[in-house]
Amino acid sequence: DAASTSGASALRMLAAVLAAGAVYYLATRAAWVMTFPDSKVSLFFPPHAILVSILLLVPTRNWWAYLLAAVGSHFVATQQAQWPPFYALQAEAYDAVTIALTAAAIRMLNKSPLHLISLRDALLFVLIAVALIPAGTALWGAAFTVAYGYGTEYWIEWRNLTTSNAVTTIVLVPVILIGAQQFKSGFKVERGRIVEAA
Image (cartoon, rainbow, N blue to C red; front, side, top):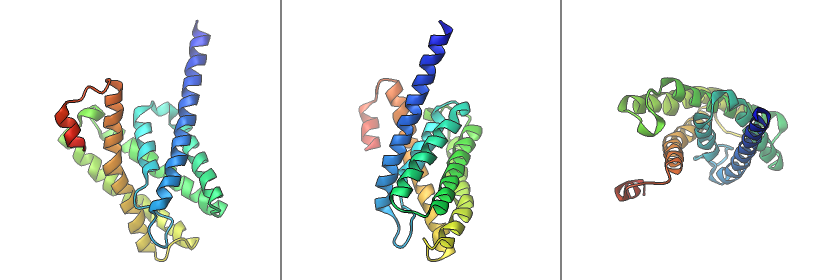
């Protein structure tokens, strides 16, 4: 019946959101090992790519739940690391806005299925998600990072944040999306593709 079907659907979504929050938390803890010297910014920030990919794979009406789970799990991690709460909250807002903008831009501009991306879509992906959004949002992120004394100079922090989000997006988002597509199709992969991935 309809009630039991919608209840089961809601439970599946809740389980997926909680799992996403847990993965985001673990990825955050791992990413902190790769921070730049004298900075809170990681060279490679896998949680960013994980959440961008999740948002690209789920309906937009559910984005708020995944973003909230990520913000909550990241805030827990920052408090365990004894970050000042107001700095941590600004970091959560920065990450959520950057991730949502990246996923929204890819979804709006991409005309191909994510696993069969065209050259046009690949160029737009690099221009928007790898260059413009990381560079633009880093103007804000660098400001509060330096204001709280977690960075030495504004432009160094801007560079660190831009590089972190750009490298993470271009390296991990395609890998995660292709992996998700392969998982759905039962991992029917040609041997040449495995060599290419390696």
